[in-house]
Image (cartoon, rainbow, N blue to C red):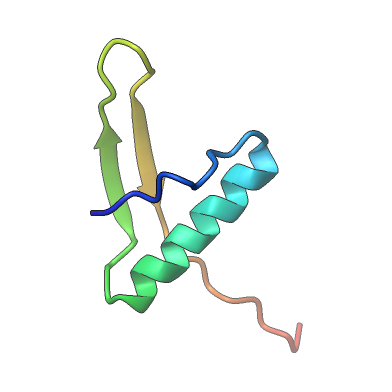
Length: 63
């Protein structure tokens, strides 16, 4: 995996949401299954997170 050193990390919840959405779109476009769960272990400096992703059904526009 490559990391863009010029990419600024998110500073607001909105920027985080945009970054997550972009990451999921890119992964899905590359054939990666983005549903499931992951443990994100981060050492002593940061908290650990449990990430669970569930695909949502698109809204029915007839309702």
